[in-house]
Length: 358
Ligand SMILES: [Ca+2]
Ligand SMILES: [Ca+2]
Image (cartoon, rainbow, N blue to C red; front, side, top):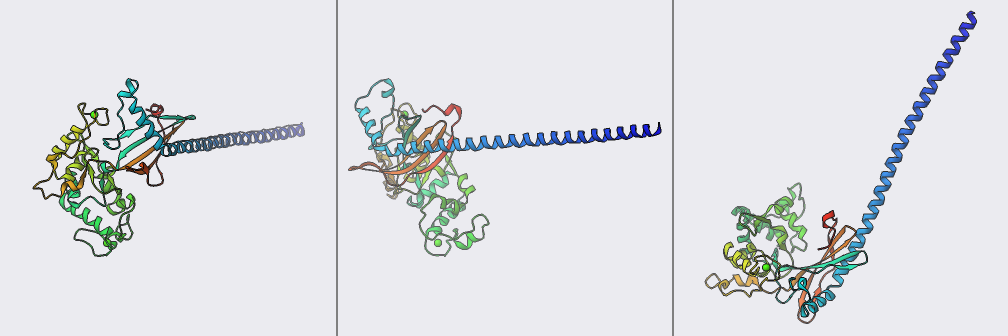
């Protein structure tokens, strides 16, 4: 009996241990299953991500090719635009602003052209609608920075730093900056270039990224402000085009009040008062802008004729948009021709509502 009980309890003990083993084995299996399914889910997600990344990359490549096609087709697009101007068709056509490179106002954008599953179009803006870091005279920069509400001392520092960066010596101007000054800045530790600025990026080094992006000039409506940075360029001869430039730039270059410049801009926008519409007016430099008695320097900083254009090729392929840009010069004998290799300025996924080309 005793042996039987002992055996019985041993068996129970074995059974219990067996149960424990089965229990822990089950736990291990469960745990492994959870870990495995988690790993599989992660891998699947990763694969999906890689595939979608690859999908985006290949669609972007298609969009980039479309953008380049737009730039390559510049001459054809201009020719077609000219022909459609000779034979204005339907109502939509007559309400569309015609492109006239000889008397260029505002900006101009072509109709979208379908190619395969994508679209491309061209956007043309006048580069002389921008103030020139290298060529615009100091007096114009000074007035513009005053319009930007920049304190006088900061204006001096701004202009001196720009000259110090480019002059060949290491002698610092009163308010400027040379190598020794840049070396002490943790975010801009570098040497002064001591040669002309050749890339816009250099200006971010000279003034500091944050500071340069913070400068704002008066906008179109009273009390509004616009960032100055996108209104600046290093291309062209430094003249400001009165038919395309924003009012503060015209005021600064012409040495006139902001109000007078705003009136000029309003006139060129035509009776509807809206820029880039069919009624926009081309203006020669008006007589009242002639600076008799104002030192005679202002009109040399102005022009009414656009000659240097920023051309943007915009390619759209399955919600991927790529914008490629290049400068183009207008010459009587050759027409509008690109003068540099295109470069990408934007590559992004369009939001749902942006999908259809305008
Ligand atoms: Ca220098
Ligand atoms: Ca208008």
